[in-house]
Image (tube, rainbow, N blue to C red; front, side):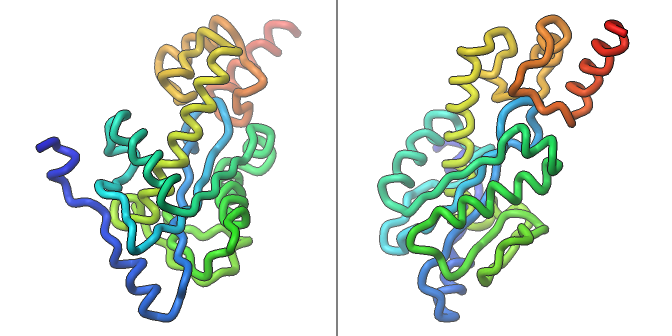
Length: 216
């Protein structure tokens, strides 16, 4: 048995509690990509079918690539899924927290029909969310719907970064997804800043400042 199957997996109890209170469509909401130096932040909202739950749902960070990919396919086939993004420009303009919340708001808005209750990962709730909800710290490790959202959001964003890596080789985005690995930071120093880098993030901002100081 693999380590992933021996760990305690997220449960469906939060969804069951919402159903018991009379709610009919319960969505889990999560985002990925707050930490990278490049690329958008991506959020997903997922309404699982209580009668057809994929097995092995877990926080996307706890799953191997192959298992995560298989679950992503299952979720898309057996659940209602919406994915949305906030761009690098929006991250720089708003700040990463607000941009993350914006992506979440967009993902929820994209569900059709709309859910009537949300299970949201984290402590803070996006300010434009008006639906009844419950915020769960580390919700992707506790709640199946949030875990499902974390998986589809990560798969989608990782694929986007692989595509961007083809356009901007040398930064390793196909493997680091834009996160500040030593190789990515070294590439920033040698290759410079791309349009997909977050200029409000310190490592990128500092390089731009250095370039400005040298040129002036």
